[in-house]
Amino acid sequence: MGYWNQEYECMPVEQRQELQLERLQSLVKRLYENVPHYQRAFRAISLRPGDVQSLDDLKRLPFTTKDDLRQAYPFGLFATPLKSIVRVHASSGTTGKPTVVGYTKDDVETWSEVMARTLACAGVTSDDIMQIAYGYGLFTGGLGVHYGAEKLGATVVPVSVGNTKRQVMLMEDFGTTVLACTPSYALHLAEVLQESNIDPSRIRLRIGVFGAEPWSYALGREIEQKLGVISIDIFGLSEIIGPGVASECPYNMGLHLFDDHFLPEIIDPDTGEQLPYGQKGELVITTLTKQGFPLLRYRTRDVTVLHPEPCPCGRTHVRMSRIMGRTDDMLIIRGVNVFPSQIETALLELGQVEPHYLLVVDRKGNLDTIEIWVEVSEKVFKDEVRHLEKLEKTMQREIEGILGIGVKVKLVEPKTIERSQGKAKRIVDRREVYKEG
Image (tube, rainbow, N blue to C red; front, side, top):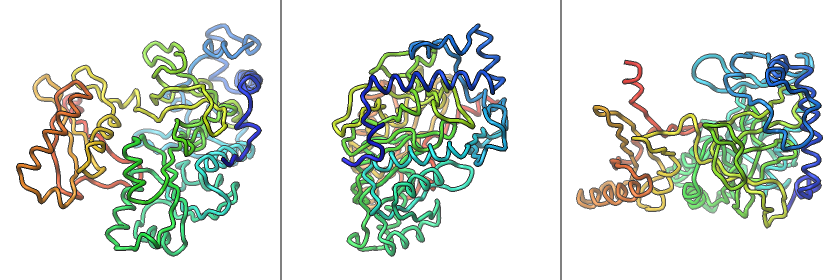
C-alpha cells in the first residue's frame, strides 16, 4: 500500500491527539486575536484561548455556520491580511452572495499535500495519466485535484467539465488511466463511450476518483462495471479546503479523514451535543492548520458516522462512512426522513434499471407524496406492459419496505431524465409552490 506521507498517515493515535491539541490551541489563539467574529463569540461565552486545555474542551467552543460565512461576505472571516491571500475561491450557490474562502501560500501547499494523500490513498502513482473533469474556476474541485496530482507526479490532463465527446477522444488518445469527476458525470461519460462504439480495450482507465455529491456503493458498482475502474469516493468542501478532506482506499472501509489537519466531530443536529463514535449525526470540522480562512467547529450539514479503528491499509486516521445525506436538504415525507441514497441503493440492487432517477415530491391535500422516476434500458422499455407493471410494483414494494411509507414508482424511457455535467439533480420538490403560495 503506497502512502504519500507515511509519518502522518500512520502516526500512532496518541501522538496524533497531542498534535491535534497543540494545533487546536494555536488556532483558537489566532482566531481570538485576528477575527472579530470569533472574538465576539468567545466573549459571549466568557471563554479565553488559555481555557482550552484538552481536546475535550472542543465541545465548549462555538459553532460556525453557513450563515456566519454569508454575513461576513466577502472577507470578514479571513484571519490574515488580504495581501497574504494568494487565492480566492467561492461557493457555487444559486441565490444570494456566494461564500468566499481564501488561501495563503502555505494553505495552497497544505491543500496540495492533502490532495496528494487523497490520490495516493486511491492508488494513483506518478506513472498515471490523470484526466480531471471537475470544473475549474471559483469552484474548488478542479484546481484542488490538479495541484495534488501534480505534487504526486502524475501526468495531468486538465480538461475540466463538459464537451463530453472531446473527453472521450482524449481518454482514448492520451491513454488516460485515472478519471476524476462527479459520479453522475462518470455515468454520462460511460454512456457516451458506449454510444461511440469505442473498443473497450482502447480505454486504459483503472481508477475513478469521484466526489462532490453523495453516492451509494451500488452506484459505484455500476460505474465500475461500465468503465472498468476501481471507484474511489473522495470528500471535501470549499469552506474547509476543497477536495482533500477525506478519501477511501481500495479496502472500501470508509473514508480516511486527514485529522491532523481537519478535526472532526459528530453532533446531534437538533441539540448540538457531541455524539460518540459509531453514532450517526452531523459532521462538524475544525480546520487545525488553515491560515487565511480557518474555521472553528464548522457545521457541514453532512450526515455520516465516524469510526476510530485503524484500516487494514495501515492508515490510522479516523474513518468516516460515506455521506448519507444532509440535514438541510433531507426530505421529510409524512414525518419520515428520506435520503436519496437510500432509494438509489434499493433501485440499483434490484437491477434492470439505469442509474438515473428523479424523486418528485408533491402535496395532495394535506398529504405529502413521493413519486420515483426511474430510467430503464431500451430493451426493458420495449418489453410487454405487463412486465413493466410488475417491475414497477416490485420496486415500489422494495422501497416502501426500506422507507416505511407509500411511494409510487414510474418507469420512464431512456434519456428522459436530464443528464448532469456537475452535481446530479435528484429531487424536484413541488411542495415549494404551496409554501410560497
